[in-house]
Length: 243
Image (cartoon, rainbow, N blue to C red; front, side):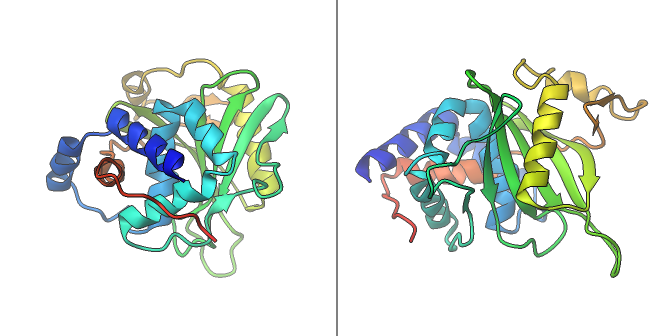
């Protein structure tokens, strides 16, 4: 337990800026980040995947996964219930499809649009670079099929970009893993992605399709919750193990 807390405190010291948190708190509102599930899937995991990919993969695929989420709940001041890693309890957290290793973080049934069904971290076997995908609830009218929207988050420093991809009526684990592996392979996910600035320059032009991906929207976001996590972890607080 102490080793896990020390490791997380170390990650916070290297990765986050409390001054950045204060700046972002003044500069933007929290209308899109109202639940811990949104924060974890859309902010925390993509940032940690970009900055500490090997450590994040190791923590979520092993016994420290529950401590990781418990500490996030402590920081946010709300219980983080119903969140976990598919297969980790059985020692089968890593799912492999066509040479792509993936971890699937599951969430409670989404309460509204944008909330996640799954967050999938993917990498090529034998490498450490991670790609971060989210499968979120889309807007649908009563009686219409379920809309599960796939998106990828790219993070560079304190900027991030959401790339909207395809959608499907299937929110099952198997469907999400299949889609993630397909896009990863088509987009050569083991290679360094283009800079965010280069991708942003294409917004408004004719969209380019690659592996079924369509760049639909760019969202420049501050890593607010990450700075909160850093402030807590650097204070020396210990987490507690879930369940």
